[in-house]
Image 1 (cartoon, helix red, strand yellow):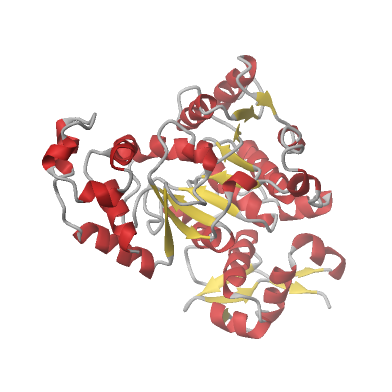
Image 2: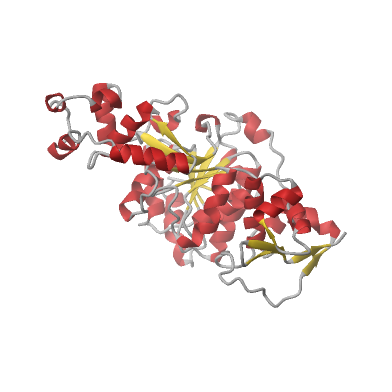
Length: 403
């Protein structure tokens, strides 16, 4: 913990940035040695004057505050010199000196990680493709990595969660800052089932100039990047360019020529910068020899299960804003369809909340399912319209299970 405050001091110097922080590390070896250096020790650093002046500020108030925030939020700080810092990320041109991780810690170098990216305002068909491909990727053993913004990002995250697998979201602000508000229902579930990762400390707002730096981490953690839908000039193309510069594989979903959203992904395929993808196997076949146990050993979801779990034609699957009970009859789900539509956790929760609305804690007590899994399952059930949130954060089953 004592060493961490010096890492946070170094990475919070105004105007230094990731490259500047690594430049200081190359010279002084450790942040602590850089902290105790004198003004003349900084003179030989290949940094602009304002960055050198920032190193003269020895206040530890901000680092100590960040440490306190991370402890309160159960957030881990990973440094560039930690043994489990991803080697893939270490090898890019400008790796982050520090990462903040909320949720599970992944050994990315042992994961068949695939980034799924795309437009924030995609066509309904692209939303469906993103969710389906991400579900298939996750079910077959890949680790899906994305942002958490509305559009393709949230569809990718939802697809991986519906496969019952972990997912990682790389953020352009602090992991405690929900952005955009439409994705608030995903934050808790990603942290429970996987991880939220950022190079920005808690409390940092999601700013426009943070997204491109975020993109180089997103691609850097992965073996390849899948673009589902994008324009030629877009944030998705910036991520693709990072991937190409980092030597990552690039994949793209073809779109009909009469669709306005076709230009970016179709151009990538036309210019042979990306491999055409129609199904998850088109990506995974490139890595199955490197990760045979992860990718060859996973049992794929059956077609009926995939169809049952995929989001319906709703444009934005956000939970209901109003707590009032909808005036509709509860759907009765036949016993033969229950396993294909819902996971075992979801079925247990539906049974528990069939008679009266329960809080998440009451559901945990009644089902004996761990809290993180209950929270994740509740979100998926809300997305499907199978559970309704009522006043007091109580949840009620909107479907009946045939016994």
